[in-house]
Image (tube, rainbow, N blue to C red):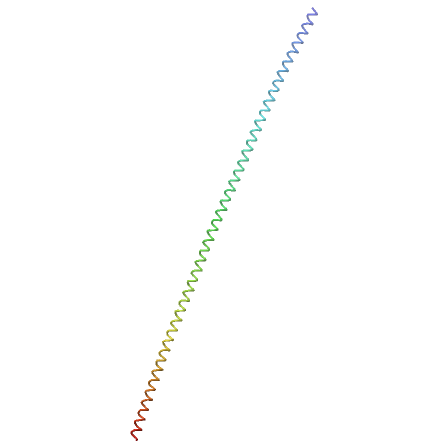
Length: 159
């Protein structure tokens, strides 16, 4: 009977050992599965974080590009306006120069006209003066001729 008890104890011990071994195997499998799940979760989380970071970077880059584009357009617009103002200013200056030149030309024309008018009047006066002088000289000559004739007649009478 003692031998039977020993055998039973031995069998029980073996069965317990077997059970413990299987339990350890199961625990080990569960632990490995848990580790794999956690590793997969970490991998997914990392991937998501990388994707999010990349998206944010791209958005920032896009915003920066849009701002640069806007700045460039603003610059071009300003340059265009400045050019326009410069052209307008040059046009005004040109107009002012032309107006000033016209005014000068008109003044010169009027001065020339006055000068010519004055010279014409002076020439007419001179002409009249010469004519009067000539007339006077002719009259004087005629008077002298008349006197000479009278003298001659008187002398002839006296003879």
